[in-house]
Image (tube, rainbow, N blue to C red; front, side, top):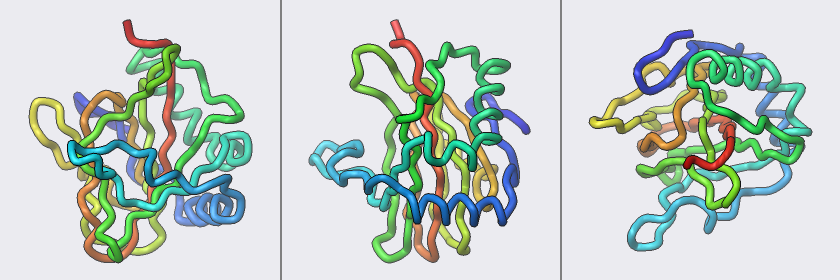
Length: 189
């Protein structure tokens, strides 16, 4: 585990076998595909995200990702200090598929909530790619753009403040898969 000023990261936090287990479980048990109208929009009202997203309720996948979630929660307690609601059984976990077929990407955005009671405080990502890929680089913007080289291999994991602008560059070869976990807490005031 290591940190920068903007995020914490873990190189190869999970094994290739664990990656296959997670992907297989979600592929066979996901609840729904994310609506293409749901993600953030640009000024032309076009979706910033072109990845395919399978969504699964936390109660279904909990036993497969407990170590991941526990590590992220502990890191928050020790290093970020946000008050979090914790994941409930109906919290959603996303499996994102970025492919070369449509040059999948996710333009600059931050993770937020339109809920009047809570905000998304932290975003956790796990690289669960099973195939090699090119492109699909993860970038954070905090006064300047930073390519996050610590999140480029299967098993890598990252946790960052959700209000930081971030993006995924287009995948130009292969398929990039990431697991996304959002941690919410009381509304920022």
